Every structure is written in C-alpha cells, then in structure tokens.
Length: 258
Length: 347
Image 1 (tube, rainbow over the protein chains, first blue to last red):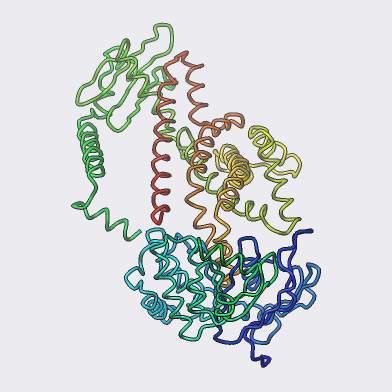
Image 2 (image 1 turned 120 degrees about the vertical axis):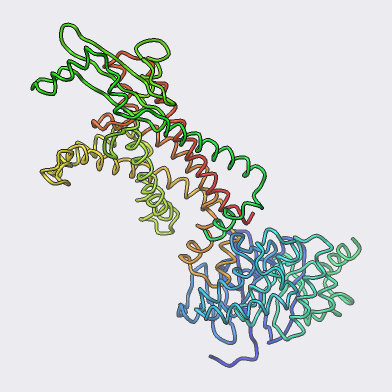
C-alpha cells in the first residue's frame, strides 16, 4: 500500500453524456477523519460525483485514489490503467454507502441485511458477524428490530439500518447520498444524530445533503457544486457566513430563507 | 417450513376464516369417509345381475368366448357396475351403488349418474398407469412447468446478460418457441427428430415393455412442452427480474457483491413473488394445452372424453371433463396463492 496523507483523492474527474457535461474536472483531496458536505442545487452533479467514487457511475475521465492507491483511471470513456481485480475490490470495500432510498433488501430481516455482505463477500465467521451486527444495531438504536423486515420500519429506522449495514463491512470512508431527503421531517433528527456520532468517532465522511444545519455543525469542509463543477469550497463558516461566489450566495439565500 | 408447521399445530390462534375452512374441510372429509364405508362392495354390485345375465356369466366361465362384458368402476364414495351381453338378444344392465343402496341405472337420473361415474372414472385414468387421463394431464403439466421455470430462469439470465452472443441466442430461442405453434413443436420433436437422427422414442424403454411406444410418446411430449414453456417462463422471469428496482443492484454492488451473488441472493428471491401470478397463469394455459397430446396418440382427459363421445354417442361426457379441469385448476390456483403469500411475508 502506498503511503499518502490523503485517504481519498480524485484528479480531474469528469463525466459527460454526449455533449451534456455532468461533472467537469473535479479535484478533491480528503484526509482521514474529515467530514465533507457537498451542497448545491439539484442537477449540479453532487450525487453523480459521489456515486462515481464507488463506481456506481462510470466517469468519462479522471483518476481516483483510495488510501494512496490508484483505484480507477479512465480517459475518454475507457479504462486506461487496468487495476488488479482483487486490489480494486479491496479498495471498493473501503467505501460504505447510504442511499437516499435506503435500498435495504426487503426480503431479508434487518439482521440478515447487515450480516449478508460480511459473510458473502468477506467470508467472515457467521457468529462473529452476528455479534458485530447486533452491536451495530445497538449503536444506531435499533437493537429491538433485529428480526423485523425493513418494510415494517419507518424511513428513519430503515436509513439507520442502512448505515449499520454499510458499517458492518468496516469501511474507512462513508458516502452518504442525500440520506435524509426521503424522510419525513420528524424522522430526520435520529438519522443525523447517528451520522454525528459517526463523525465524532473519526469516520471519514462525504455527505451530499440539503441539511444545511448538519453541514454547518458537523462538516470540516463544505463543497458547493453547481453545473458539474466545485464552484466554491471552504470551512462551513466561510461558505455559510462569507460566501464569495455569487452562485453560492444566491443558492444559500434561496435555501436558508425558504 | 418449521414456522408453518408450528402455526398449523397452534389451532387456538388460527384466524376465524382458517377455522371455518378447517371445519368445512374436516366435515367434508368425514362425510366422504362415511359414504365410502357405506358404499356397496364390488361383490354386492356384481351379484345384482338378473338371472338371465347370471346364466350367461356362468356360461362364460366355462366357455372360451366371452359373451358378457362386465364393467366395475369405483370412485371413493360411489360405484358403478354394468353388464352387457353381445349377440342377437343383447342385454344390458347398469347399477349404481351409493350410501348403502344399489340403484338401477338404465334410464333417467340413474342412467345419468351411472354415466357420470363411468366417464369420470375413465377420464381420471383410473385402473391405468400414471400416463393416462387426468393423471397424464397433471403429470405432464407439472413436470413441464418445473422444467419450464428452471430452464426459463437460465434463458432469462442469458437474455439480460451483457454478453451479446449469449443474449442473442437466448432471445432467438424465445422468439422461435413463442412464435410457432406448440402442436407443430410437438410434431417436430415426436416425428422429425427421430427421423433426422435415426432413433425411435420407444427405444428409450426395454423391448419387452408393452407400453414402450406410449411411454416414448410421453417423453417426446414432455420435451416439447418443457422447451415451449421454457420460452414463456423466460419472459416471465425476465420481466420479474427487471421489475426489481435499480437501487437493489446498486446497494449490492456498493457492498461488494458480485453479479452472480446479487442475482442469487438479492434479485431472484425478490422476483419469485412477482413471478407467481404469471407462472400460475402459464400453468393453467399449459394444463389446457396438454390436450394437444392427442396428436401423438397419448390419452389425456380431452382425448378420452372425445373418444367416449364418438364411441357411445353421449354428449354428457363433457360435463365431468369440465369439472375435472376446474378442480385441477382450483387446486393449483390455491397452491400458487399460498406460495405467493409465503413470499410476500416481508411486504
């Protein structure tokens, strides 16, 4: 493993569908333990960027490094540097992801959802995995729901299970794709609390969010994206109190005064 | 399965509807048992023959040429016996035995009842091996659906595969088998394949087996029906797989599951519930398509009923045929409903 002070780096990440530019030359370096919130208007490419980090979206060109190791290098829609499959998978597993729509497996119980990947992908011992899964459920406050089916839970509970499921793979980076956007307002708080706890434990997090309060309070750095580029980045204080870019100003004005 | 048995034993907590159904089923079962026990015995039925008939029967015992045909059919709670002699003074006597009594069945309601028992008995394929009548229909349909669903799943996965060659092969297969009549497919398997490849279906069975030709025809039918239902089931499975939301694939991928693992552990189990109603539909269609086997001389319900109609010039024969089909359909609809319920537990 190469040594790097950054746990995640992207260089010149771009994506376009034909002439439509979705992401344009995004460069980001994330240190271990950093919490980065990505905000911006819809259609700015926030989710696409986040999803391209773990290859749910194919980027057109750019390089992605995880823990200093090259994870992906593509140019003109082609992979130019082939990376050993095992290495790539190991690096992929350093990232856990939570989705806007939770995407829990509805036919499996909460506990089975959490245990599935460690057993099937990492071939870990079932009993150990089960103990860890129950521990994680306790952590997200759902110890009593282990045997429930996801569809019998509220949205907030489902999202917390999804976080536990991602954490069960012991990732070093957590990606959150609008984790609270599909939730009823009164359920948002529990999910954000779990995320805050996670941040306090030193988890590296990239969060695409519309929760400005959360970004202000928890983020180490805030990226403001618009039209496929990072229009402005800085500390929460800088972005929320003294934004420089007029796009940032107008966006914040419309969001915060809504 | 364990929980199912537990629930079954736990009678106190049964739903009211289940309790009523249970009582009705048990009641009907008890009634059947009582009626079956009260049913006149075969010997009693045969003793009913008139004196003239008895004399003829006695002569038959010693003579080489049989003059009287005796038919005895028993259907759980009711039985039927007929004697008919051939020759110049042909005699015919029919009896129906039910609930401890024996009735004459030569005309009117008795005759009708007698016919129903006799026809039902023959259409069920009673007294024959498993490849006759309703048993053939059931056996053929069930087996070809099992083959169809298994094969269809493979075809569906092939069709949605990213490998263009595999995908094209599977699509073409489906196109061919859905685009041509089942009967011609049956003919091709039964007649053309042996002619081209120089074998005979009966060769699958030992030369001494009297039923070899018949069994061979059944194997040919099973292959044709299996291949055909595979094509239809493939489309059902494909539609079910593709109806699973994209997020499931993404979540599995983000957790590091391979494509195969995702299909096996996440997508297919969820598709099953969505497959059940259309597969049930396909099953019912297949049940009725099974009557096409008359074309290769197999005897299923439809073929037998048509034979009875032409030989006895009796149009009542279709009534029991319809009832048998309905009973089979009802039974399987009930089973498929139960499967669907089992797989929708989590919803």
